[in-house]
Image (cartoon, rainbow, N blue to C red; front, side):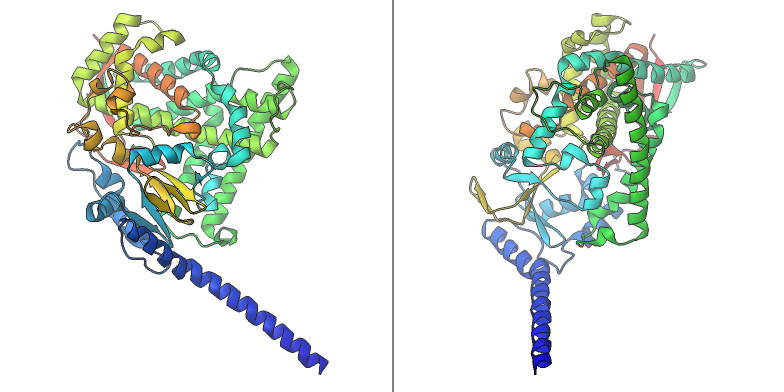
Length: 518
């Protein structure tokens, strides 16, 4: 009798667990998505009807592959249909107030500047989207921290990007640019001109810049790390177009194993750089003015004792170093690449920038404080960031029911802030919104955007990109060096195909013809 009772209880418990798990799965893949869909449609948001588990992911993946089969038919700056093909398809079909199914989760598109401003300011209500954990192996650190942990880490890293610290980094940045220009001059020495695939050169340049200025090592020392990070990105990118199943990352699949192997190797090499710097600091009893020294000083007790900042462990130092390698390389190389392409197309603005530089510096190296005098160069860079932002969209997560403006956002949806769409919006920027016209920034960003929240290539608010000033200084110095020595134009072999792979890059490279300046 007693054994029968125990058996009955055991069976009952198993049934309860099975029912609970079954209900949880059904709620995740069907009931919750349908409830969120109804809520969004009642507020005027439109999109495809929800399809079990996969949502729009299959169609999105197919359209992405289709769009990359060939370059754009012209050199237009209206590249949204090529770079974000499915997103363009949805807004064309349903309008800008729409949603896309990211598996069982709706991704809600918000284009109203006043709503976006509120989202950027309320960082505790709208957190970074919790993406596939595998992606965090590529970009760990500050990027995915929230709340108090984020505030502490941001406070620690901010001093490394103060203006006085950036000033000390200028010689390292200039040295990196000089080496690249020397290579180009040697290629052009025989005939006075040469054709160069600049994307690979600029990636190498920005890698060298971040290694020298932020970590004090040469490009050769960091080359393997950059190569490994690039491999990781290529492996992880398909994850964006697939449905993440909780726990999948723990399975010993070929992809999971390779991502983990690369991550281990990167960490071993970064720890080698960190230990080398730690030994130098201990031996010389002083630190360099760069990011790595800032992190190490905190870790090993050299920081100001009055700062109430939680010390980082060695893994956290490695995470921030890895993130800086990734972000520092991609942001600068992307900005420089599209600037050269725009100026290669527009010889008038290229000449105006060159004349400003020659009048200010001649052929000499500018001082840090003199870069602020380059008004035309700054206008050009701002316009390039408007047309070709390094990141095309930002996502945020809604963790509780919340109202902003006239919109009620239910917990469980993701928000999409379409940077490219807003920065090329004709209702804000005028009929020439998709044209390259740096003159629009002659009186500053606020005047150009008519005071709207419509220009945020580096983000905005408390979580604005920490390295934005660093990227702009790198771009200005390199552009000065190039324009002092070369006149350039797009090669007939150039094929226009901006590709969205984490950051914006040229799908088929970027061939440009350089001629020695008379």
